Length: 150
Image (cartoon, rainbow, N blue to C red; front, side, top):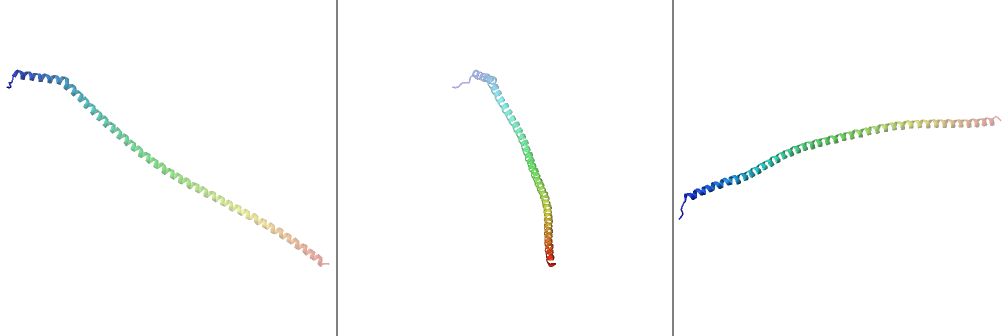
């Protein structure tokens, strides 16, 4: 049969207590220290990751703001360039119109001068022809008069 020996129970309890104290001193504390160190390291990594994420979000917001600013500036530059091109186009057209008007006025003046010269030349030719005709008439009349006086 089984007998229960109190000294055996006492030594088993003492052995268990000693084993517990030895495990606590040499096993549980170092293992808990390693577990706590890992836990702290993981918390630190999470904190670093959160900080990096916040910095990345801030940089992204800054980038988006700069990108929007650049788009706005590019739009303004395009509008200004179009306005300048339109103004230059209108100025070139106005300059061309003025030059055309000046050339047209000069051409009209040249035509008037040439017309006047042609008129004067025609009048001179007419006067010369009239003078020649008058001389011929006078010569014919003199010859006719000389022939009739005989």
